[in-house]
Amino acid sequence: MEVQAHNKEPLNFADVRTMFKELSQETDRKIQELAESIRETDRQLRKSKKELDRQMGELGNRFGELAEHLVGPNIQAKFGVLGCHIDAVSRDFTIRDDEDQALAEIDLLLQSSDLVIAVEIKAKLLEKDVDAHIRRLEVLRRWADKTHDIFVNARKIRGAVAAPIVSGEVRQYALNAGFYLILQTGDTVKIDVPPGFVPREW
Image (cartoon, rainbow, N blue to C red; front, top):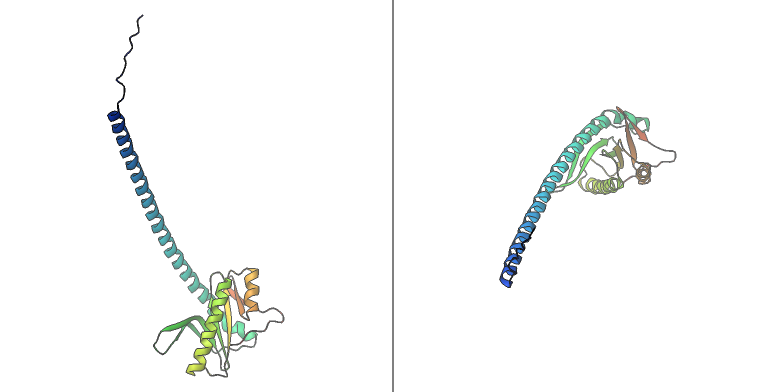
């Protein structure tokens, strides 16, 4: 059997240049498609993150509202046991300057004739929340001294933080800062006052 060889024409420079051009164009197209796919994936991830942040924010707000309702009704009696007889409880108390700009917001403001307790409520208490509440109480003290409105200089100002989730480390951090620590357990609350605890006054 005789085999016939079919020889192809050898590639010349023009053929190589054409092949290289076609290959380059195809590579560029693939790179552009990949880049667009990456951009679209990034857009989708950003959109998903934004939606997740929004949902988490709403959940946090709802949890905060629930926490306020859990803390509020029992708080006067709980502090009464500690000798702090509370006459009035205000929710969402806002401190404003002379131009009506908000300086600080307080979740619960407990008042008696000689004492004010500002309560910050969180779903999970962190050290940064304790630090922020210290600054909030400093604002409250300055505002009280300046306005002489519902406060008088002789009135003591104390702070408290409330949360259903508090780690042992953060618990100690809050107590060291001089805050009453209000812990939610089920449908009731308790005030964590260890032996030797002395509340800080502003």
